[in-house]
Length: 327
Image (cartoon, rainbow, N blue to C red):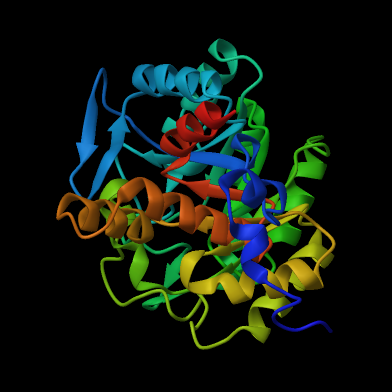
């Protein structure tokens, strides 16, 4: 290998044009999925205090924002629901008239050619805030599976394009795939939150989705942040059960996991740039501690560089505007 002075790495960093020519990682608006929080309330759009620029919004506002997302060239949204009432089984999640099902119908009917993904979990809908059926103070994994399948079928009946189970229950992908296929929804793909960690970075999301657990925590079913090989095992298991796409969540503290999962699986890999990662940049920028746009783009490129095929991010609209302006 040639060494200095024959080899000068700065030659290909000398101008913006050369840097763009040799850039190894490319980020596109097509990579983004925009999360939205849909509330049962009527004609409201309430900014989430811990997530500036993000809102709890009624279905009419959600339709309008979905149209804005499409016009920016972002290909997909993912919906999270805030129901009117919660109960021990999260019945609004699998009711045909549940808030997300109604939102799916409205967005699909009024915003053409936008992919609608539905988060498939129970925590936003249960009175206890856990991601499954609680028995004796613990989440009962196997009893939960039937409910997850029922939620998937309800979302598919409403016209969802992709279901995204996020509860980290053992066997959830298999149960959902069987439920969908049994009801003739064999073409509905599953994007599984395969490697979802028990993370401190979910705090703002729990404000937005009103989904904080009422007792205990989720460490018995979400992953331990000390583990990476386990994430690969979880992803491979979900693929064997029928997952069409897998996800790593959060993204920024788990870039190594994104890379490992990308190398190990033959399916598309999503990464969720979560609420805490978003809000940290927003807060630091407001204090003048960093440049928001530069930090945002650096983070998004790092997630793509790690191997993510798609990025769920609250920055999607903001980043889309920047990428479109560059083109």
